[in-house]
Length: 506
Image 1 (cartoon, one colour):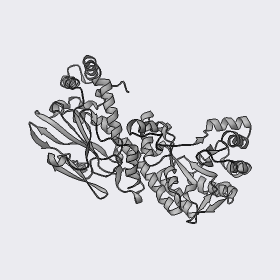
Image 2: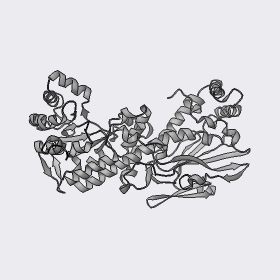
Image 3: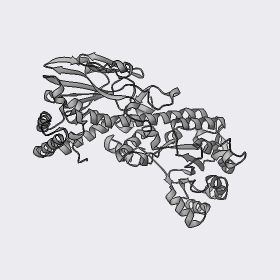
């Protein structure tokens, strides 16, 4: 649990909004909505125009734990002294008294007087459809609705972005699997998360890794498994949350090359004495990649083919190119500008096919000997993934011969709140017992930033969600937005298996 009080996790400009709401305000009602996918990175020809909603339950569980742990469970004098010091040193010693008094009253109340209603996580949501609404449940705390905006926004949109990007990789793999005859299991491992080290801190890596795992079971972000067990009722004893394999990195590969004096002898020791069974991935570019796969693997062929299945019935030696003079495409499929007949000209697939052989599957595509394969984890963007598959098809290769590692670049480059223009905006309030709706309608961005108005109801019509705004309270209580948090308690919990079921089977 963080030692930073949840009361401090707010944009500083909000600290006196309690004074800006008109006198007599009793309720503020807001919603979080993806407004535009104009900046989203997608493969447009199969993009469905939707964002994957994910991460709210995680945000709520952390919110409950942190407010209870850093605020409500602490002595009032200690909490308010700390809060007062933070505000007065920030906006000035003569300011902030009204907000400090309100926070004191909140501590007396002993819980967060909010209600959050949300669509089911794992829903594919069109632009301009609210994914959740939030309102205060006690009239004294109308200011709290948008006080928590900062926290909820920064916790939820990154998870949605990661899940939506993971879906794009999954859809591309799924499409080419159907074309070339790759199996369903391959689709679930075709894109492997290598992103953790490149993220901006451990929580960012965990959330990104969790979004990845909605569509893939392949990941090296180990603590994303803890994420799902902690926040989404998963159990790795009973279900496959994520998996990986034994693999080298350059530190181990280069040390061994120096020790054995030969990369071939180093690998021979690895596959005969350390990993004689199962799947083993070897990073293959520490010295001379093309020399290793075109000549070294010939020397290792019988050792590789003599490896046996592990207790799961799996066996494969996987080479991992990790750098390229141009792009991963040429390394995998060959460089037409290279010397004809050279390893660079042939590419990895053709070289492995020549050494280990291949068969034709039911759709007539070449499939390498099952004891050899490739995983490539450098610069695999959505466009590069698609381009490699296209060339593999043109050369007659089934896409199942290759796995891709998805790195942090994919999840971070041009990925921000603006990717789907997520925003939390107020749409309704109550002043002295009378409803007062509000709406953002900027002339400078009417098409992209106009917000919903009034109380909201979302209904499911076929594969789409439809927004009905300016609803009476009776109608607002209906529809697909269900209570997930109220007055400090969590409701209608969902699980990883339920989310995956919504996404994989629809």
